[in-house]
Amino acid sequence: MAIPREDFESIVHAHQAMLYRIAFNFFRNAHIAEEVVQDVLLQLYENGAGIGSRAHLAAWLRRAATHRCIDILRRRSTQIEMQVDEMPDVAEETAESDPLLYERLRVLVASLPEVQRLVVILRYGEDMNSDEIAAALDMPSSTVRSHLHRALALLREKAPQILGEGIHESI
Amino acid sequence: MSQFEDNLRNALREPEAPADLAQRVLARASQGRPRQSRLRQPLRIAAAIGVTAALGATGFHYERRREERIANEHARDQVVKAFRLAEQQLKPFRKQLETMQTITISIPKGENQK
Image (cartoon, rainbow over all chains, first blue to last red; front, side, top):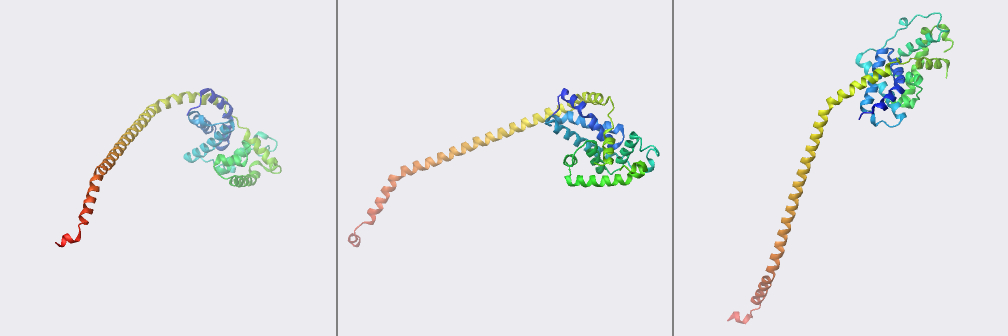
């Protein structure tokens, strides 16, 4: 059952940024991120009238976005295999420049395996706890915590090479 | 929370959606719904006709079975009633027959020897 147009407009304005952030952090590609946002919101528009509260709606959208990201990734085989030597070269100024540091951190996150990447994006980008992430990704909370633990270990391991020695001290 | 995790949080919250993304989504939604509705309408009508026909057929079949069952029960009742009537009609004759048998049995012995 379709959502009334007025309700849909307010949902789009309220949630598009969150959906875009999840998809962009996952793919690091603005076009694919936009495609994910459009697909998820249109799916909601056509079939989402039964979704109840605001909390349910946000959870539904996050879940739909993560599943769409995985679908697109598997269908197109466009996994971002970012190598350390492909990263932007910002050798000396990383420690002082937050935008560059953040950009490199996003690249670093994008280099994680897909499930670990989603867990990190949902945990730090969307402030979700492990139970919420577990519900979004259809897996037990203990698995989420395990993915998060491994992801952080991997990020900490790669970080010194990618972020530079200056950053290494602050990790 | 470590500084690394803080940096991670800030980094992952930074990307912003394009300013006109909402407009593009709404424009696509405006185009999408009527087209899909047009495509789905005949299917919905066909499904409704199918369901109505199936319900009608089931109802008709059920009604016929019900009428047959009532007719059978009525016929059975009639047969039972006929048997009971026949039994009542035959009762006096049976009594007479029993009496006659009793008379036959009670013939004195001596007369038979004659």
